[in-house]
Length: 89
Image (cartoon, rainbow, N blue to C red; front, side, top):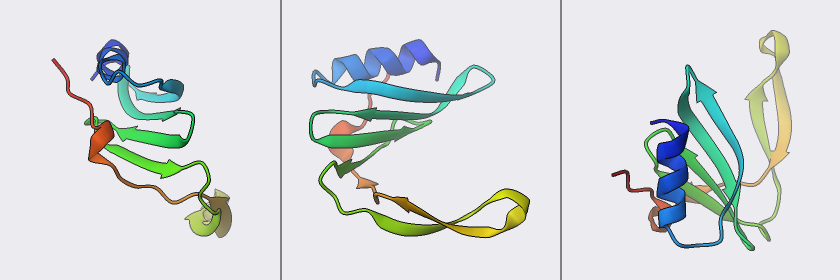
C-alpha cells in the first residue's frame, strides 16, 4: 500500500492518532509507528496493528547488531491489537 492509503485508513479510525514514522520500501509502506495519548501503535504492511500501553515496563530484548553481533536493547513489547486494524478501500 502507498502512504496515502495508510493515511486515509488511519484517519478513518476516528481516534486521535499521531503518525511518528513510516518506513518505506520502493515507495510502499512496510511499517507505521504512531501513538495516541496512552498507546503506542505499530502497523505492518498489511495494516495489522500491534500496540502497547505507554505505561508498560521496559524490557531487554536481544537483536542482531553491526557485524552480526548479538546485542541487548531496551524496549516495550507490543501485542496484536485488532481494534486498530486498518481497512483499506
